[in-house]
Amino acid sequence: MTVRRIMGTEIEYGISVPGQPGANPMVTSSQIVNAYAARPELSKGGRARWDYEEETPLRDARGFTYTGALYDPAENLADEDSGLANVILTNGARLYVDHAHPEYSTPEVTNPREVVLFDKAGELTMAEAALRAAHTPGIGPINLYKNNTDNKGASYGAHENYLMSRQTPFADIVAHFTPFLVTRQVFAGAGRIGIGQDASEHRYQISQRADFFEVEVGLETTLKRPIINTRDEPHADAERYRRLHVIIGDANLAEHATFLKVGTASIVLAMIESGAFDGSLGIAEPVSELRAVSHDPTLAHKIELRNGKRLTAVELQMSILEQAEAYCGADADPDTREVLDQWAYVLDALARDPMELADMLDWPAKLSLLDRYRERENLDWGASKLQAIDLQYHDVRPEKGLYHRLVARGKMKRLLTDTEIINAMTEPPSDTRAFFRGRCLSRYPSEVVAASWDSVIFDVGADSLVRVPMMEPEKGTKAHVGELFERCEAAKDLLDVITAD
Image 1: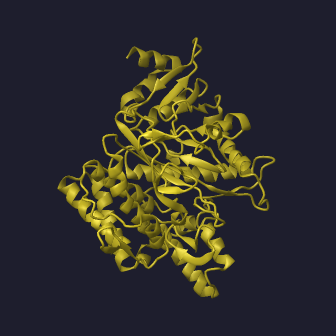
Image 2 (image 1 turned 90 degrees about the horizontal axis):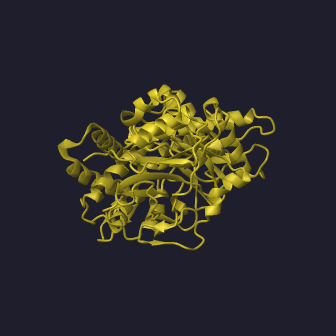
């Protein structure tokens, strides 16, 4: 048993232009991405486009393919025709415009700590992009926020991806992953002032996203959002793998919150793959309970299970942890053991007093800031000053964001160093195919014409373009091909070796 698997995140960032509330969000998002694309390592060759050929977003994990208008491929192809930006980075990540937001998708990694690392590299990427845009003639300041709602009825995503066995029945994922997702917000929520999609009721809640989910299972990601998303687009060998696309989750700034969010999810998925759950934790009404848990920062709300029992979200998480400990046993590797130990520590603290974790998790950290300000200024939850503090917590600017100011004052515990994160902005992970993608872009920028998660396309002056498929995410690693990049001066040399093998 191991927590290790191919995983990653996709974060859409909130965007605003000071003094221009009517600014076109697609234009400003493109300005952000294009500003970052001016970095020397990205601008020295022709910009590689994203390859959409193998994308199948209408294929449903329940065994059918939609033919309706749930998804318009033209939206994703519009970057070539309307100027919307799409950049593939030398660390293997993707920075692009998704609808009306700049989005950063991490490269594929193999463990929770590296998810945190490349997710934080995304924050620095966005901060630098905004700074570059502000100094670009004709653009000016653009503010970016790692959050999930404008508190006016709109929400934008913080998605996770986990590669898992195709042999696992999807019904098992629905049955056993749903209780976990409904309750993990107790440590993975980012906190929000406002109840309801439009924040019309002025109270604090645990999750930014909970109020925007309306069904238990479905393919959509922007309307009628489901707790379990059924998109079946593995970006890998479809005979072997399923990519579970998790759209229910907040954009975390706290490193420990992200670590726990993805680490515990990976363990639970391993247990589902092994048939380790007995179904005793099924929730009677998952959607309504998702919201009820989020709306109660005291964590006292009792969830009704299908078997009639009632548990708090923390108690349900403790039940999952107890089964995980028994499943992993004494043979758990160090990465898995770290997740299990931190999971237990955090749940114990939540059971005593969530505010004990104001130095580790986002929603208690933000609530602590807000409570202190409320008491000092004698404000109720509807005060505009509190709304401003809520938003400012998520500002990506190190000198402005309240999370970053807590870090600077030593008020938030960390897993990583600044140096590690800065390096991850340009260096790919070494143990996935992202290494091959990233190195191709840094070594041969003028010869890579397109790329995607599962291929790189070269133009080396031959009669036709050359596509190198990468259907196995754990191939193309540094151990695999690192030496080739050292001795192949041109892409043609690399392709000659690859095709000869």
